[in-house]
Image 1 (tube, rainbow, N blue to C red):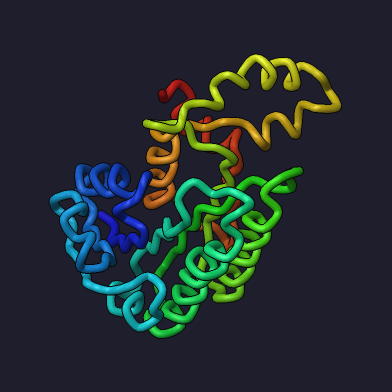
Image 2 (image 1 turned 45 degrees about the vertical axis):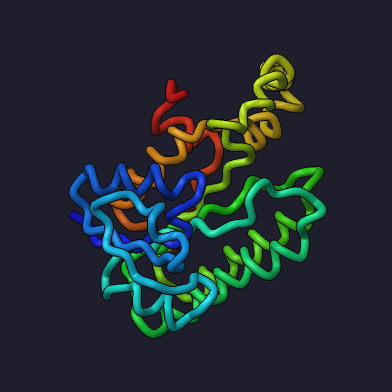
Length: 219
């Protein structure tokens, strides 16, 4: 199976994804700071280091692996613009530099749906992340969810009736779908599927409808 390196592997999506990849017999490496190593699921190889350091990211890579980038500021909000620059964008800059030293076969990056009427600073950082990774010329898959429903993050379920209404209005349908809700399980499923899918040439975007299609009934 595939050799996979994950940054952000102890976060909201990362831990579940690592469990899934290990269960599928992938050779998984997690780049993790020392204080977070206990959070890494069993079966993954741990590399001690920071996802904000290009040298550490390069040490976690093997030529021809898949690199999955999940580092991000928890619970994004407009008040966290400085963190988006210092963490989210810094991690992509480190990854872009690292893959010029040790070249993976494929990069998978979780971005965000856009355009959108809110979260401008977050969207700008994620769009810049996409650009930096495209410039590496390594085949790139970009996921563009809007909001990921899961444990502790279910309040947008109250918006489902409004989403359904907008999807029925031709002038609103595309926006409602692009900014639709996806589940934690759907995100894990599509990330795992992208790991073994045929490589994009050179760039592939998986938007909300594509994420839902991988596991449409996942809760």
